[in-house]
Image 1 (cartoon, rainbow, N blue to C red):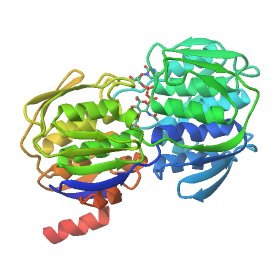
Image 2 (image 1 turned 30 degrees about the vertical axis):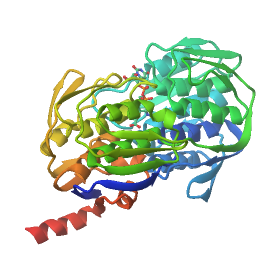
Image 3 (image 1 turned 90 degrees about the vertical axis):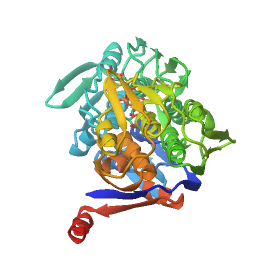
Image 4 (image 1 turned 45 degrees about the vertical axis):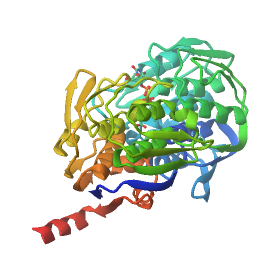
Length: 431
Ligand code: EPZ
C-alpha cells in the first residue's frame, strides 16, 4: 500500500496539464462493446479505473491494443458473452454501464453489482432499472448479479428520470443507441461527460440528439462501426488543481481544458478573492490575498459539482469567517471532515451542510482518504498545512487522478509517494 507524504506550506507555481476525463472514459470504454470494428480512443487518463475496465473487456474477449500511453484500439467484434461478473467489477462504479452496453448489443446482460466510491449511504440504481424495464427488459438481482433480458432488442420509449442521475442517463443512452425505435430520456443529466459519450456514440454511427440538455432523443440504429475518438479534458481534475492553487497561494496555469466546464468553480474561487482568468483552453488561478468566506451548494451540472465538494471545503477551512458547503446531490458526502479536523479545521455538520469556521492555518497530521475526492481534499489540505501530512488510502486517489504526485511536484509541492515499508522504516528511525 502506498501513502503520500507532504511537507506543506509551498505556494504552487507553474503549469499543469489536465488529463482526459475519468467519468467520460469509464462510459466510453464500455460503449466500445456495442461497436463492430475497431474504436481508437485517444486522451484516456492513465488511472486505475481505466485499466480495470480495459481488463474487463479483455476478459470478455475484446482485442485491446495500446497505441501509446493514452491511446488504445478496442475491437469488441468477437465478444460473444453477456456475462461480466469479475471480482474487479465490484471495485468500480462504472461497471454498471456494461448493463446498457450488453443489453443494447445482445439483448441480455449478467453483470456484477457495481462498487465504486462509498462516501456513506447506499448508491441506488432504481432509475436504471426503471428505464430498462420501460424499454422491455426483465431485470432481476440475485447473489450480487444484475440479470437483464429482453426478447430481441430493447424497445424505444419515453423515460422520465425521477432524479437527475448521471449514471442512469448514460446507461439508458447506451441501451437506446441500438434499440428499436426512438427513446426519449426526460429530466436527463447534462454533465460534460454525457455530451462526450453521445459524441462518441454518434461518431460510431449512433443517432443521439439533445445531450447536454435535459431531454435526450435517441433514434436506435442497427449497428455502429469503428472510428476515432478523443476524450474531453477532466473537469474535476482541473477543478482540483484550481482549488490547490487557491489553497496554497501562488499562480498556476491549468492547461488543456474547456473553461466553460469550470464556470461554477471559477465563480466560487472569485468570490473567495482568488483571481481566475479564463483563456481559450487554459485557466490561470492566482491568489495573493487572504481567502474570503463563501457559501457553496452542489447541484447537477451546470451547478457546482458534488465531485468538487470535498476539495472546496478543504480550501474554505482556511478562509476568513464562516462558510457553508451544502451537499445537494448525495445524502452523505462528509466522511473526510473528521480527517480535516485532525489537521485543526473547525467544521460542524448539520444535516447536509458543513459549517466551516476558517482557521489561520491547518497543521500536518497522519490522515486517511475514504474515497477519491475526499483523498484529493486531504492532499489540498496537506499542501497548504504547516508541517508534515501523511495520507493513507491513496489507492482511491490513484483510481481517478493521473500522476498526481508528479504533477504537484512540478508545481513546486513537496510531496512524495512511499510504500508502507518505507513508512515503517521512517517510524523506526524517528522512534
Ligand atoms: C456519477 O455517479 C459519478 N460517477 C460520480 O462521481 C458523481 O458524484 C455523480 O455522478 C454525480 O455527479 C461516475 O461518473 C462514474 P448519479 P452516479 O446517478 O452516476 C441518486 C467521482 O468522484 N440516484 O448521478 O452513480 C443518487 O443516490 C464519482 O468521480 C437514485 O436515486 O451518480 C444520488 O443522490 C463519485 N437512483 C443522485 O441520484 C438511481 O438509480 C445522483 O447520482 C441513480 C441515482
